[in-house]
Length: 323
Image (cartoon, rainbow, N blue to C red; front, top):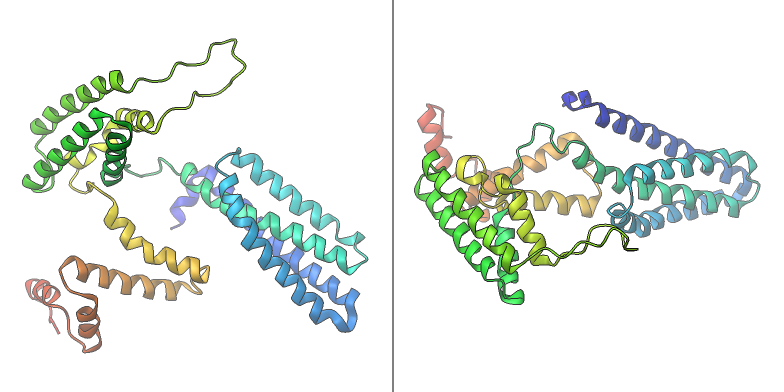
Protein backbone atom coordinates (compact mmCIF):
# COMPACT_ATOMS: atom_id res chain seq x y z
CA UNK A 1 0.00 0.00 0.00
CA UNK A 2 2.86 2.37 0.83
CA UNK A 3 4.57 1.51 -2.46
CA UNK A 4 2.46 4.12 -4.22
CA UNK A 5 4.08 6.86 -2.13
CA UNK A 6 7.34 6.18 -3.95
CA UNK A 7 5.78 7.94 -6.93
CA UNK A 8 7.15 11.47 -6.52
CA UNK A 9 4.27 13.43 -8.05
CA UNK A 10 1.62 11.41 -6.25
CA UNK A 11 3.50 11.74 -2.96
CA UNK A 12 3.53 15.53 -3.26
CA UNK A 13 -0.12 15.55 -4.24
CA UNK A 14 -1.06 13.29 -1.34
CA UNK A 15 0.86 15.37 1.22
CA UNK A 16 -0.72 18.54 -0.13
CA UNK A 17 -4.16 16.99 0.35
CA UNK A 18 -3.31 15.95 3.92
CA UNK A 19 -2.10 19.46 4.79
CA UNK A 20 -5.17 20.99 3.14
CA UNK A 21 -7.54 18.73 5.08
CA UNK A 22 -5.81 19.50 8.37
CA UNK A 23 -5.94 23.22 7.62
CA UNK A 24 -9.60 23.10 6.66
CA UNK A 25 -10.46 21.15 9.81
CA UNK A 26 -8.62 23.57 12.07
CA UNK A 27 -10.16 26.57 10.32
CA UNK A 28 -13.65 25.08 10.70
CA UNK A 29 -13.05 24.50 14.43
CA UNK A 30 -11.67 28.02 14.80
CA UNK A 31 -14.67 29.55 13.05
CA UNK A 32 -17.04 27.52 15.25
CA UNK A 33 -15.29 28.68 18.43
CA UNK A 34 -15.32 32.24 17.14
CA UNK A 35 -19.05 31.97 16.52
CA UNK A 36 -19.46 30.67 20.07
CA UNK A 37 -17.62 33.69 21.46
CA UNK A 38 -19.60 36.15 19.37
CA UNK A 39 -23.05 34.62 19.85
CA UNK A 40 -23.01 33.75 23.53
CA UNK A 41 -26.32 32.06 24.41
CA UNK A 42 -27.23 31.66 20.73
CA UNK A 43 -24.07 29.72 19.96
CA UNK A 44 -25.97 26.48 19.26
CA UNK A 45 -28.12 28.16 16.65
CA UNK A 46 -25.07 29.77 15.05
CA UNK A 47 -23.17 26.47 14.89
CA UNK A 48 -26.19 24.69 13.41
CA UNK A 49 -26.45 27.34 10.71
CA UNK A 50 -22.72 27.04 10.04
CA UNK A 51 -22.98 23.27 9.56
CA UNK A 52 -25.97 23.75 7.25
CA UNK A 53 -23.91 26.18 5.17
CA UNK A 54 -21.12 23.61 5.01
CA UNK A 55 -23.38 20.81 3.74
CA UNK A 56 -25.11 23.12 1.27
CA UNK A 57 -21.74 24.16 -0.16
CA UNK A 58 -20.75 20.52 -0.70
CA UNK A 59 -24.06 19.61 -2.33
CA UNK A 60 -24.04 22.59 -4.70
CA UNK A 61 -20.35 23.08 -5.46
CA UNK A 62 -18.95 19.53 -5.76
CA UNK A 63 -20.89 18.58 -8.96
CA UNK A 64 -19.95 21.89 -10.60
CA UNK A 65 -16.31 21.44 -9.63
CA UNK A 66 -16.24 17.98 -11.21
CA UNK A 67 -17.34 19.46 -14.53
CA UNK A 68 -14.98 22.43 -14.19
CA UNK A 69 -11.99 20.17 -13.52
CA UNK A 70 -12.31 18.77 -17.04
CA UNK A 71 -12.13 22.22 -18.63
CA UNK A 72 -9.38 24.11 -16.81
CA UNK A 73 -5.78 23.23 -15.85
CA UNK A 74 -6.15 21.17 -12.68
CA UNK A 75 -2.89 22.25 -11.14
CA UNK A 76 -3.86 25.91 -11.40
CA UNK A 77 -7.31 25.14 -9.98
CA UNK A 78 -5.90 23.21 -7.00
CA UNK A 79 -3.41 25.95 -6.18
CA UNK A 80 -6.11 28.61 -6.48
CA UNK A 81 -8.44 26.73 -4.13
CA UNK A 82 -5.66 26.32 -1.56
CA UNK A 83 -4.90 30.05 -1.76
CA UNK A 84 -8.57 30.81 -1.16
CA UNK A 85 -8.54 28.64 1.96
CA UNK A 86 -5.31 30.24 3.17
CA UNK A 87 -6.75 33.74 2.75
CA UNK A 88 -9.87 32.66 4.61
CA UNK A 89 -7.76 31.44 7.53
CA UNK A 90 -5.78 34.69 7.57
CA UNK A 91 -9.03 36.67 7.74
CA UNK A 92 -10.05 35.09 11.08
CA UNK A 93 -8.47 37.75 13.35
CA UNK A 94 -10.49 40.47 11.64
CA UNK A 95 -13.93 38.87 12.16
CA UNK A 96 -16.18 40.75 14.56
CA UNK A 97 -19.72 39.90 13.41
CA UNK A 98 -21.66 36.66 13.15
CA UNK A 99 -22.54 37.22 9.51
CA UNK A 100 -18.83 37.44 8.73
CA UNK A 101 -18.41 33.95 10.22
CA UNK A 102 -21.12 32.69 7.89
CA UNK A 103 -19.38 34.24 4.86
CA UNK A 104 -15.99 32.74 5.76
CA UNK A 105 -17.50 29.29 6.35
CA UNK A 106 -19.29 29.44 3.00
CA UNK A 107 -16.04 30.41 1.21
CA UNK A 108 -13.94 27.86 3.07
CA UNK A 109 -16.30 24.93 2.52
CA UNK A 110 -16.96 25.88 -1.11
CA UNK A 111 -13.21 25.76 -1.76
CA UNK A 112 -12.97 22.39 0.02
CA UNK A 113 -15.94 21.01 -1.91
CA UNK A 114 -14.31 22.02 -5.19
CA UNK A 115 -10.86 20.76 -4.16
CA UNK A 116 -11.85 17.16 -3.39
CA UNK A 117 -13.28 16.11 -6.80
CA UNK A 118 -10.49 17.99 -8.59
CA UNK A 119 -7.90 16.15 -6.51
CA UNK A 120 -9.57 12.79 -7.18
CA UNK A 121 -9.74 13.42 -10.93
CA UNK A 122 -6.02 14.21 -10.94
CA UNK A 123 -4.96 10.84 -9.51
CA UNK A 124 -5.68 8.72 -12.66
CA UNK A 125 -3.62 11.12 -14.77
CA UNK A 126 -0.80 11.16 -12.22
CA UNK A 127 -0.62 7.36 -12.10
CA UNK A 128 -1.73 6.72 -15.68
CA UNK A 129 1.24 4.52 -16.56
CA UNK A 130 2.10 3.21 -13.11
CA UNK A 131 2.17 -0.59 -13.40
CA UNK A 132 -1.10 -0.58 -15.36
CA UNK A 133 -2.02 -2.46 -18.51
CA UNK A 134 -4.63 -0.57 -20.47
CA UNK A 135 -7.51 -2.28 -22.24
CA UNK A 136 -10.33 -0.48 -24.03
CA UNK A 137 -13.85 -1.86 -23.67
CA UNK A 138 -15.13 -3.24 -26.97
CA UNK A 139 -18.71 -3.38 -25.73
CA UNK A 140 -18.61 0.41 -25.60
CA UNK A 141 -16.94 0.47 -29.01
CA UNK A 142 -19.75 -1.65 -30.44
CA UNK A 143 -22.35 0.81 -29.14
CA UNK A 144 -20.48 3.69 -30.74
CA UNK A 145 -19.99 1.77 -33.99
CA UNK A 146 -23.71 0.98 -34.13
CA UNK A 147 -24.49 4.66 -33.65
CA UNK A 148 -22.00 5.65 -36.38
CA UNK A 149 -23.61 3.20 -38.80
CA UNK A 150 -27.26 3.92 -38.00
CA UNK A 151 -27.09 7.70 -37.50
CA UNK A 152 -24.15 8.78 -39.67
CA UNK A 153 -24.37 6.08 -42.34
CA UNK A 154 -20.74 5.01 -41.83
CA UNK A 155 -20.36 1.69 -43.63
CA UNK A 156 -16.89 1.09 -42.17
CA UNK A 157 -18.43 1.10 -38.68
CA UNK A 158 -20.67 -1.86 -39.51
CA UNK A 159 -17.68 -3.76 -40.95
CA UNK A 160 -15.56 -2.98 -37.89
CA UNK A 161 -18.29 -4.17 -35.52
CA UNK A 162 -18.52 -7.41 -37.51
CA UNK A 163 -14.74 -7.86 -37.40
CA UNK A 164 -14.58 -7.35 -33.62
CA UNK A 165 -17.33 -9.96 -33.18
CA UNK A 166 -15.41 -12.40 -35.39
CA UNK A 167 -12.18 -11.85 -33.45
CA UNK A 168 -14.03 -12.34 -30.17
CA UNK A 169 -15.51 -15.63 -31.38
CA UNK A 170 -12.08 -16.78 -32.54
CA UNK A 171 -10.63 -15.94 -29.10
CA UNK A 172 -13.39 -17.93 -27.38
CA UNK A 173 -12.83 -20.91 -29.65
CA UNK A 174 -9.11 -20.75 -28.92
CA UNK A 175 -9.71 -20.90 -25.18
CA UNK A 176 -9.21 -17.22 -24.30
CA UNK A 177 -6.10 -16.31 -26.29
CA UNK A 178 -5.19 -16.55 -29.97
CA UNK A 179 -1.95 -18.17 -31.13
CA UNK A 180 0.62 -15.61 -32.22
CA UNK A 181 0.34 -16.48 -35.92
CA UNK A 182 -3.44 -16.13 -35.98
CA UNK A 183 -3.26 -12.89 -34.02
CA UNK A 184 -0.85 -11.47 -36.61
CA UNK A 185 -3.33 -12.29 -39.39
CA UNK A 186 -6.07 -10.14 -37.84
CA UNK A 187 -4.03 -6.97 -37.35
CA UNK A 188 -3.42 -6.18 -41.07
CA UNK A 189 -7.15 -6.64 -41.72
CA UNK A 190 -7.93 -4.28 -38.83
CA UNK A 191 -5.53 -1.62 -40.12
CA UNK A 192 -6.71 -1.96 -43.72
CA UNK A 193 -10.32 -1.42 -42.70
CA UNK A 194 -9.40 1.73 -40.77
CA UNK A 195 -7.31 2.97 -43.70
CA UNK A 196 -10.33 2.63 -46.01
CA UNK A 197 -12.47 4.34 -43.35
CA UNK A 198 -10.26 7.44 -43.71
CA UNK A 199 -11.82 7.97 -47.14
CA UNK A 200 -15.39 7.59 -45.90
CA UNK A 201 -14.83 9.61 -42.72
CA UNK A 202 -11.96 12.04 -43.41
CA UNK A 203 -10.43 14.37 -40.86
CA UNK A 204 -11.63 17.99 -41.00
CA UNK A 205 -9.35 20.59 -42.51
CA UNK A 206 -7.16 22.30 -39.96
CA UNK A 207 -7.43 26.05 -39.46
CA UNK A 208 -4.97 28.14 -41.49
CA UNK A 209 -1.99 29.51 -39.60
CA UNK A 210 -3.31 33.07 -39.86
CA UNK A 211 -6.81 32.07 -38.72
CA UNK A 212 -8.19 33.69 -35.56
CA UNK A 213 -9.56 30.35 -34.42
CA UNK A 214 -7.21 28.39 -32.18
CA UNK A 215 -7.01 24.86 -30.96
CA UNK A 216 -7.97 21.55 -32.47
CA UNK A 217 -10.73 21.56 -35.07
CA UNK A 218 -13.85 19.81 -33.80
CA UNK A 219 -14.38 16.25 -35.02
CA UNK A 220 -17.59 14.32 -35.46
CA UNK A 221 -18.31 11.44 -33.10
CA UNK A 222 -17.61 8.98 -35.89
CA UNK A 223 -14.26 10.60 -36.63
CA UNK A 224 -13.27 10.60 -32.96
CA UNK A 225 -14.12 6.90 -32.77
CA UNK A 226 -12.08 6.14 -35.88
CA UNK A 227 -9.03 7.96 -34.52
CA UNK A 228 -9.33 6.19 -31.15
CA UNK A 229 -9.47 2.77 -32.84
CA UNK A 230 -6.48 3.73 -34.97
CA UNK A 231 -4.30 5.34 -32.28
CA UNK A 232 -5.02 2.76 -29.56
CA UNK A 233 -4.91 -0.41 -31.62
CA UNK A 234 -2.95 -2.35 -28.99
CA UNK A 235 -5.44 -1.48 -26.24
CA UNK A 236 -8.41 -2.36 -28.47
CA UNK A 237 -7.01 -5.74 -29.56
CA UNK A 238 -5.20 -6.71 -26.36
CA UNK A 239 -7.89 -9.33 -25.65
CA UNK A 240 -6.53 -11.34 -28.61
CA UNK A 241 -3.11 -11.89 -27.05
CA UNK A 242 -3.58 -11.55 -23.30
CA UNK A 243 -5.87 -14.12 -21.60
CA UNK A 244 -6.24 -11.74 -18.63
CA UNK A 245 -7.56 -8.92 -20.85
CA UNK A 246 -11.34 -9.22 -21.35
CA UNK A 247 -13.18 -8.27 -24.51
CA UNK A 248 -15.40 -5.99 -22.46
CA UNK A 249 -15.18 -4.43 -19.01
CA UNK A 250 -18.92 -4.79 -18.35
CA UNK A 251 -18.25 -7.39 -15.67
CA UNK A 252 -15.78 -5.10 -13.95
CA UNK A 253 -18.31 -2.27 -13.99
CA UNK A 254 -20.99 -4.53 -12.52
CA UNK A 255 -18.64 -5.67 -9.75
CA UNK A 256 -17.74 -2.09 -8.82
CA UNK A 257 -21.14 -0.48 -9.28
CA UNK A 258 -22.57 -1.37 -5.87
CA UNK A 259 -19.46 -0.05 -4.11
CA UNK A 260 -19.94 3.27 -5.88
CA UNK A 261 -23.65 3.27 -5.00
CA UNK A 262 -22.76 2.74 -1.34
CA UNK A 263 -20.23 5.57 -1.56
CA UNK A 264 -22.79 7.93 -3.09
CA UNK A 265 -25.39 7.09 -0.44
CA UNK A 266 -23.15 7.15 2.65
CA UNK A 267 -20.21 9.20 1.40
CA UNK A 268 -17.65 6.66 2.58
CA UNK A 269 -17.11 3.55 4.68
CA UNK A 270 -16.90 4.27 8.40
CA UNK A 271 -13.99 1.90 8.95
CA UNK A 272 -11.57 -0.29 7.02
CA UNK A 273 -13.10 -3.34 8.71
CA UNK A 274 -16.56 -2.37 7.42
CA UNK A 275 -15.20 -1.87 3.90
CA UNK A 276 -13.52 -5.30 3.99
CA UNK A 277 -16.74 -6.99 5.14
CA UNK A 278 -18.79 -5.22 2.48
CA UNK A 279 -16.34 -6.17 -0.29
CA UNK A 280 -16.16 -9.78 0.92
CA UNK A 281 -19.95 -10.14 0.78
CA UNK A 282 -20.16 -8.52 -2.66
CA UNK A 283 -17.31 -10.72 -3.91
CA UNK A 284 -19.06 -13.87 -2.67
CA UNK A 285 -22.35 -12.92 -4.34
CA UNK A 286 -20.64 -11.94 -7.57
CA UNK A 287 -18.72 -15.23 -7.70
CA UNK A 288 -21.93 -17.19 -7.09
CA UNK A 289 -23.73 -15.37 -9.92
CA UNK A 290 -20.87 -16.21 -12.29
CA UNK A 291 -21.44 -19.90 -11.45
CA UNK A 292 -25.21 -19.67 -12.06
CA UNK A 293 -26.08 -19.56 -8.34
CA UNK A 294 -28.77 -17.00 -7.56
CA UNK A 295 -28.40 -14.41 -4.81
CA UNK A 296 -31.16 -16.01 -2.73
CA UNK A 297 -29.59 -19.46 -2.92
CA UNK A 298 -26.14 -18.04 -2.14
CA UNK A 299 -27.40 -16.23 0.97
CA UNK A 300 -29.35 -19.31 2.10
CA UNK A 301 -26.18 -21.41 1.91
CA UNK A 302 -24.31 -18.73 3.81
CA UNK A 303 -26.78 -18.57 6.69
CA UNK A 304 -27.18 -22.35 6.92
CA UNK A 305 -23.42 -22.82 7.18
CA UNK A 306 -22.92 -24.63 3.87
CA UNK A 307 -21.20 -23.78 0.61
CA UNK A 308 -22.73 -23.75 -2.89
CA UNK A 309 -21.94 -26.86 -4.90
CA UNK A 310 -19.21 -25.30 -7.03
CA UNK A 311 -17.29 -24.22 -3.91
CA UNK A 312 -17.68 -27.67 -2.36
CA UNK A 313 -16.24 -29.25 -5.52
CA UNK A 314 -13.31 -26.84 -5.39
CA UNK A 315 -12.67 -27.59 -1.71
CA UNK A 316 -12.85 -31.34 -2.24
CA UNK A 317 -10.34 -30.96 -5.05
CA UNK A 318 -7.89 -29.29 -2.67
CA UNK A 319 -8.46 -31.84 0.10
CA UNK A 320 -10.18 -29.35 2.41
CA UNK A 321 -13.39 -29.94 4.37
CA UNK A 322 -16.31 -28.73 2.22
CA UNK A 323 -18.34 -28.02 5.32
